[in-house]
Length: 130
Image 1 (cartoon, rainbow, N blue to C red):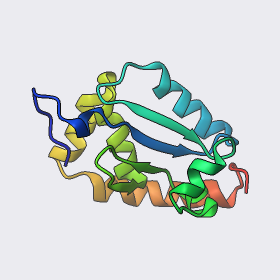
Image 2: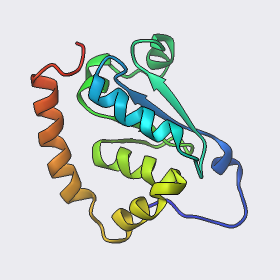
Image 3: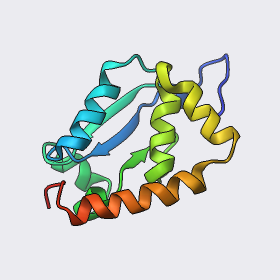
């Protein structure tokens, strides 16, 4: 779980990297919503189809990134799926309370169950570009 502190450390200043499918209208709409909001923690949004060198530098397969949302947190930890969303929420002022609630109530397993089914459906329906 992420911890908030009053003293900002170097890790707090290192941006999270959010890898998202910029060819998917649904994904782009949601990410664009988050991008407009004020962040508590810096976030670099990495569009898969435009930033191929960044994707390759982390050694992710494009297919894995298309199947699930991936976030490389500022501390270097990679989280995917529901944990990735909780990381984003925790990092944005407007949704910080939601991210905090998800961690505090240990909701990741339940949200992951739902996310996994949705992600498989989205991928099979080719809402994303393969």
